[in-house]
Image 1 (spheres, rainbow, N blue to C red):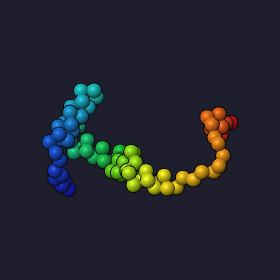
Image 2: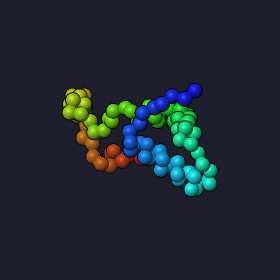
Image 3: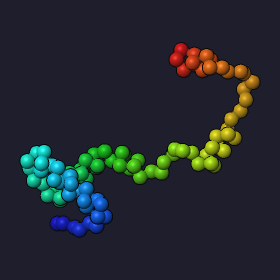
Image 4: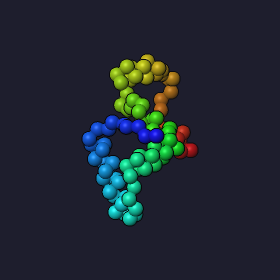
Length: 91
């Protein structure tokens, strides 16, 4: 059973380019359906990467997130210099 899926013209064009490149480099002709099925299978196997690609970026921080970080700061009363930080980080 096949179902039609609408894609933007630029996505269709890139699919066609990929299809042509596969034919040139392997000598095997693949249909767009075969190519899309393979791409979906690959994406399914690495679904966390695909899901993460739809998350909103956390960088840079929003002004509210920056303010929340500032509110969480406190002064310990201990002066720290660069060598102290190096000792903690690198031992």
